[in-house]
Length: 74
Length: 252
Image (cartoon, rainbow over all chains, first blue to last red; front, top):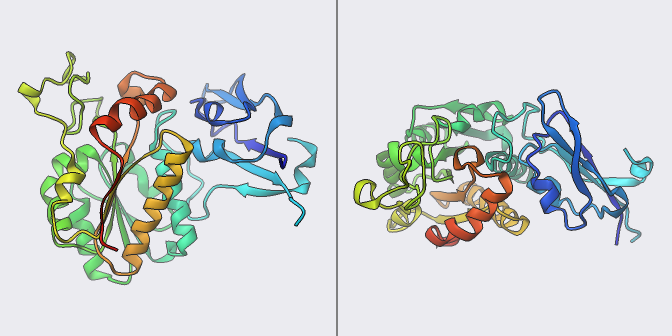
């Protein structure tokens, strides 16, 4: 399984939690940190488990997530 | 940020056809996902330069802020009529309207039906969240029986307010439309299905096949008084019973 990671734009995140529910690896969680708008933003609670599937980014209504994936040798 | 990101490839980012402006939608609202999918479609088809979008009245009234294509913001319900004019004046353009259920299926009923009946070569994105979102959660034509809204606090009583109208099925009775489908966004499979449907609707217009309508069952966590997650479950378990998913017409 390739490894991945996500970069969450904390100022775009509205803390809706849909990415947390969409993640099949249970990587994401609420951080407990509020952004400037007062939203409890999502973050990577278990970054080592991320496979870069991008389900979180597909689900995010605010396009706050970018996804990176390990290069797979061809 | 993990230190090994330099050895990774970016597999998901903001579509190039969208501006960087933040969405004005409430947390968890499906409008943002639909906007992202349209941006991705404009990228994939390489048509942003010749696309003209039509923003409605409703929560998506600011839609013109988010696309890098040209856009108009039109009178309530009249987006399909304006789309007709824009497309006939500039047939080389790709024209799409983005309309909610109150806009498309209530206030714009006449314009919506007749644009479809003429088979105008346009793409209509019809966002059905079963409520008037921007104005405060009032009864919409698509509101479910017994659903509580600010104007039906005891729930929609069909003897007083009628039944939810399946507007896509109404339009599917016409001979002219090329593609009519209903999709949802409650999980990643449905998001993929919606992405494919929107792409097909734009492709049909590029190929000159005529009118296409993509209805998308959307959520309104704020006015439904639900969390975003509960809203998705509500669409999956309740709304799809009234508004079944799938293609109604595909004459491509």
